[in-house]
Image (cartoon, rainbow, N blue to C red; front, top):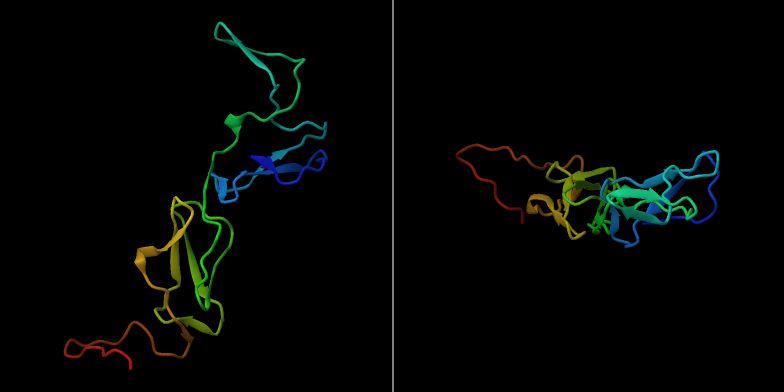
Length: 163
């Protein structure tokens, strides 16, 4: 991980970190911020040089370059950051999405509704791409006063396709 901004941080504020690869996000799904104390030190400091001797670990105080221990960082994983374009629809958010999570697309024009009466749902895959949830096709956005699904039905009738 690396800092988003490298300018000095005032005590009481935080330094935000991001994953080095552009299509990666922290596995927590939230941004990583490390607080700076009012004394000018970050919350988690690790001395640069660690020595292990007979199963004891010594921190050598004269090696005091501040580093954050790799074990404290969340793992960076592939995420969905490039949202597909669906004509007439937009996602509810464009924040990076963790694999396995879903996001709804709704009609861009608020005077329109999906002809299925359901927003289109996309699921984020582990490789950082999206796929339509349940392999559904994106609905068309139609005026609110349009007759749409569910169609009235009776057992002796069938619905004919539109021409």
